[in-house]
Image (cartoon, rainbow, N blue to C red; front, side):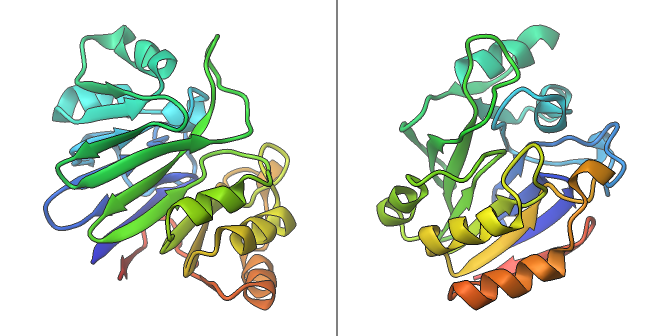
Length: 224
C-alpha cells in the first residue's frame, strides 16, 4: 500500500508508511501548489530535469530535511550550488537499490534545463508497487519497453501538451505502458497547458484497460 499525495503541477509524494519519496517539488511560484516547501517531509527527492517547474524547491527541501536527491549528475551539480547534499547520481538505464525498494532511471524525450544534461523518468518500486513517473516527455515508442521491463501498477503521465505530450499521446502512452492505473499531471497550472482532464480520462479508459485516477492538488489516494 502506498499513499499518493498530489502537490500540484508535477509534484507528488509517495509514502509506504516508512519512507517518503518526493518527485519534482516545484512549489514556490506554483499557482496550484497545495503545500509550502517548509512543510514537506521526505526521505528522498526524485528530480527528472532542471527546468524550474521540476527542480523547483528540491535543493532547499533536501538541505532542510536531510533527504537524498536522486537525479542525473548534471542536475545534482545544479542542486548542490546551495551546499553539499546527500545525493545518488544516476543515468539513463541505471538502477539503484534503496531501503524502500528500487529506482530505475528511464528515457524521457525532453530538454534537460541544464547544459550537457538529459531529461529522465523513473520506475519506482515502493510498497510492493511499480510506479512509473514519466517526467516531462513526448510520446516515444520505447515506452512499450518500459512496460515490458517492469510490470507497471501505476503510470504518472503529463497531459498538458505544448511542453509535453497532450491527452491523445498520453492515452497512447498508457496503452503501451500497460499500467493498471494512470494518474495525469502537468496540466492546468497555466493557460498554455490547460486541458479537460475528464476528456483525457474518458479517452484513456476507452482505448486501454487502465483506470484513470484524477487527483486534485492537495488530494491523496491509496494505491494497492
